[in-house]
Length: 579
Image (cartoon, rainbow, N blue to C red; front, side, top):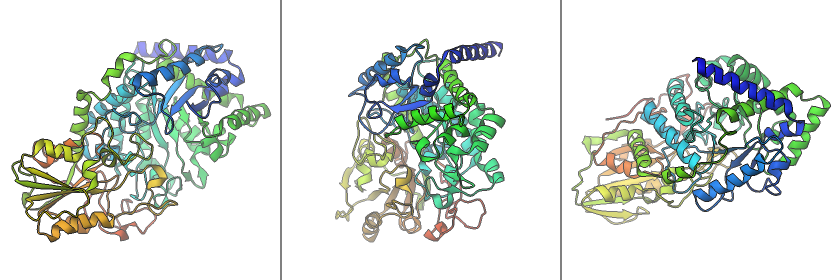
């Protein structure tokens, strides 16, 4: 313990010494995050504007392979190190369920599936692998885990969070932060980000960025505990959320950011904005509220740099506030050992998507599956069945089975490198004839079983909100997918339905129709894990991380079916799952 304290004291001394040498422009630069494309007029901006961190997100890739990604980030790091003080860059990425921006990486089940496993040790393992594969592609900072508590399945980000249960979310938050950060001085760990602070999963009607009308006691008891866990675990960053509370944007909520999070809770890491947070939520009011690093993207850079400098010179933003922000940034850079080891490790590249990592992801898939119905113990299926029909486009498409934040921000509707589809998994394990009926119109009256895979198409953020501005999604299956089931049930064929979704859907009729019904969430790259459980190599273990709605009427209220007032009886309660 003494050594750790001495190390902390040494870091604080280094931070103070460096801070004393910095100009205002250098300080504001450290508070600035840009993309490695578009936001820069050229790479020299990294040096001339003293940029502190770089984000990779949807847009041009850093290169064609991991070594090229590393080379790109190395060249930007060299620009940063060429400055007067040589302060290294942080490189951040939305690694939501694995290093999901890199094709060929191991993609884990989204957090809702990990919540169904209730296996903290497994979540920690997944986080460790995510850190390794993120470092292998050049990153030192990941914007995960999401530790929101969703109270309405109409919210388009339900799958990013672990559960409606605060207690379960606490346990898996601890595991995730521990797995990602480990010993930050190691080259195979990354700085984690707890997000989004606070109330993003509990907005009225589930609207992304809406108003969270919960009272202070409800926030304290139900939403805050996972953040307390993250802070106690030493999380390096917290991201502000898009929602408002008491009519005030969270990005500009000084009482909750500065007084509560930084003061009462003693969070000493970086408070980072979300996308374009400065221009969207009050400019320098965001800084005064306690946000330390700004995503100055999509045209915000010059406006932000000039606006913040002007704010300091006018006295609207205090020098103490600037120094607090920069101190937090420098502290994390020293904790990560970036001043001694600023460049990525090329030897980690060979670990991307390796079998050992995929084995852990496949285990997570197996343990995430929740069996909602198993009439006459039709599952597990006999591998010797003569004829099996596999139905639906989701059965043979790794993009569809993985959801949003997979290769692309809004996900993909195509197969991607290194993944195994559900159909491939079935073909690898079953011994009889396997027929694939993509659109559910095949005439296979002699089939022994139909495995019908239905679900949502990928979405991320507000694009997945139900009843929001975009409104592309429903809380039920599409008519086409309902017909897949109708067609086979009407033929008298036994049916096993596998639901691929980022949230519970109203599927009461389809559960009644089917012989067996499996909630498979968004399993990621290892679709064969589903086949292994369907055919009995492994048992069903998953338990519902959310209560399951019985009707669309459940969604009429402000909070949806999972609000804790018990006014709605679910079809299946939180924690349900057959063995």
